[in-house]
Length: 588
Image (cartoon, rainbow, N blue to C red):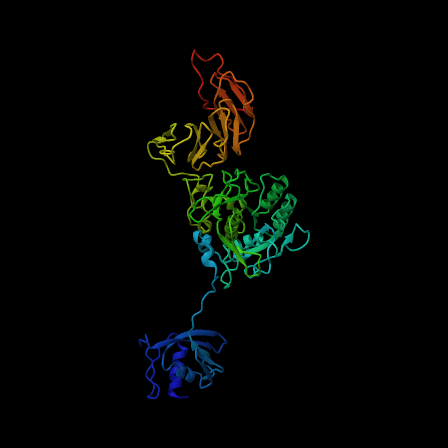
């Protein structure tokens, strides 16, 4: 064996050694302190020890001489390529020595990227990447997508699907190519990450169970939905996403949800897209044990279409959401809706299940609320619930760290003074006193009719003003739900009252005519009765299913579950009139 080969063999058996050499002029001594910066390249050596163990090491060789040196190490049996050296046989110096199998230049490898990832603002705004980095076993979790079915051959989903079912056709596995909605929802949750195709799923690695309960037009029956929920829970779904709903609560769907929850399955549902169309309460999202999800847009505002109210738990991105489409196996499209927000939260619930498979649905609900990023008014509110879902914080809390905010419902401790109230003027100005703050006013705005009444939201973080024509002005977390501003009234508006949850209100005119908006039920009026004195105010019952009207002479009119307990008759002095009602308490 030549001196060159012996010297190089000794170097290569050691790991990460710098070698200096001068070909044609003898071999220089091995020098581990040699500075090869700028004139050396890294080479990887793969060796087999006598016991069969494979090891790798990295050495630096002079850039100009490296191929020849590497060739010498392999005792002349090698192939030189432009991008490196690959040996076809190994050189063995002795029976006891390691065998060099391969020596080649070190190359750089990269994770695959998803080309449309840059268009997924929802992932940029949320913390799914940080959450997933703490979890090695997302693929143990199954999220059932109860929807229109899923395009099973789509390039970004075909590797993550588990067996599903079809409760529309009655047969099949839930895989259909003709409607984008289910595929879009599934992609938000679990589109394959780093496959060099399409987008990234929020819960990349989570398995998707396709359960078809809606037809190609996006409609389905309560029976199909209930059957799908039961089947998914019975067949291993950890989480069920319901980007669907109705203004009517179905007892059969509620019973199916109870069954799923009893088996440990988390239920996530969209709050609906009727925020500008009367904002009705949507089911099953409004059920107590369901995680109800509203939508935000790119500037952290509530998406105008998003359903809202005290039944919404958290929010997630729901505007311009890029995901899978049914136009082909490589088709993608943008969509808006709480249907797109709900799967973000379903993915977050799935990540929590990956951390702790035994976590209960109630614990998932509480944890997602307690760790949400507060948006809007401080604390829990009707527009954002507890806030923007924060999966990384939720996962960290479950692992023993993170920050909890008690569901966003506990505001900072007040500072003195602790008492406050606001005065509303006929011009719509708000004069805040003490600790009260103004969240908006009509100061400087020319009104057609004066402001005659106002009411606060249950949270105290918003209020409505009403003009004598019934025009409504909403501030803070008070939703605008409708007005009589464009209606010719027989008599002017004199009072208003909000519903218990703040998702509706009544207006009353001086003739006792009632106008109901949002979830406020119409329960009766004096609009067709000849009154001795005009109505001057109203007040709701504590349950929100009734109200009283009061006339200026103290006459009382009770509707719904409001109990008649007396009036001002015989209690007023000469010239005295009743102007409003306060401090309503009802028992029984």
